[in-house]
Image 1 (cartoon, rainbow, N blue to C red):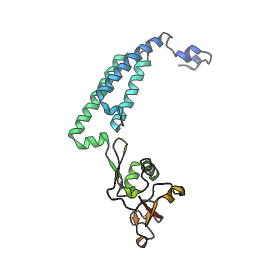
Image 2 (cartoon, rainbow, N blue to C red):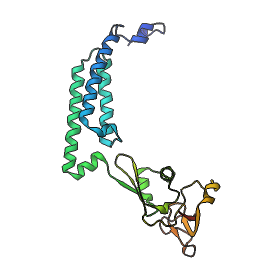
Image 3 (cartoon, helix red, strand yellow):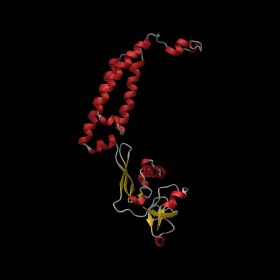
Image 4 (spheres, rainbow, N blue to C red):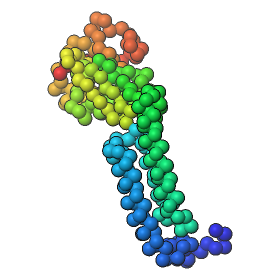
Amino acid sequence: MKKFEIHLADWQRILFGQAPPMFLLEVFIRSVIIYIFLLLVLRWLGKRMSGQLTILEMAVMLTLGAIVSVAMQTPDRGIALSMFVLLCTLLFQRGLSRWGLKNARIEELSQGKISTLLKNGVFNLDEMRSCRISRQQLLAELRGKGILNLGDVSRVYLEACGVFTTIKAHAPVAGLPTTPPDDKQVLNLLHHSNDLACVNCGYAVAPQNAQKTCPRCGANTWTAAVTS
């Protein structure tokens, strides 16, 4: 639009744009048709689209949003084009998924891979940095599952869809407490062991074996380890 065409008192333009008010009825009809067609496409894409999304599925969902917006609201565009693009998106997603079943490399690129964030009660700091997961995020996840000691955990995986999976240890050992260090009331209720745990990575050692720096991560801050 030209600058001289913009007036603050032009309520018809502000409310309806350059389309006539009757276009609202057309928008309603377009929305109903595209909404029903979108539900069918999502049904054909499978149940995973309604659960935790992988990278590929997230890309598809963002694409669907961009496609339906034009079909519903743009008066000079027909809905057939958007419906055709929706079908192309469906074929692309189905085709890439089938290709991934035959080729592990393609599956990893399109779906992502599983990352091991914690192993035998010790943080995998390199993997956490790669996934941009902080210690506080992981500790909060463990606290949410009622785990108050890293020694109770065998593995923590970050799934390709972004979900944390926790596997408890068959034989729990002493480890770093997951509770906040300033919550003395809860810390006093835990069973303290004679071992020390590295605050940075969670590695636990006997006091006589504790060095100035942690042999796993090089940090030099220790705290009392706890047991279940």
